[in-house]
Length: 144
Image (cartoon, rainbow, N blue to C red; front, side, top):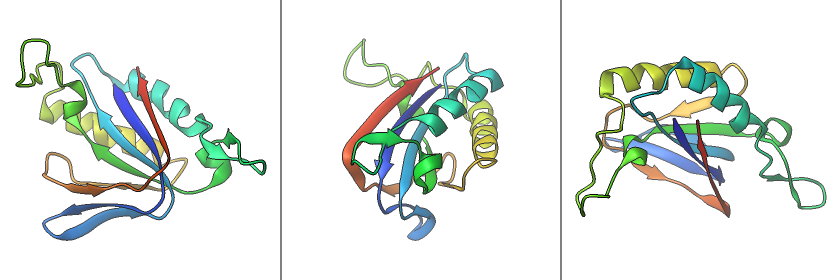
């Protein structure tokens, strides 16, 4: 499981000219699953995300988690996080989880995460327009 985490201001996800998810402040998560991922990976990843200290404290030092700072999460499925370009310029997605299994894991991930914080999402296996206002810029890759 790979999650690209970005500290965000106003961010949205749009499908068919309609905004389906948006946040004013918080984290944007680009989430990908590989062929070996399971519920265990999700259970290990969620605390990493929730406790990642990338928000400013009273001294403007990145020392607060999203739970301490406040905000929401915009979660976007992104199978291309497992793109492999070792054999040329055309990426292979052989290591990405198939869409049926990845869809179940993505839904489980968002359901478990939403027990702690409000989660907005895109629509799985759909072309989306994602507008991310990256603050910092702060971008971190987490992997399990």
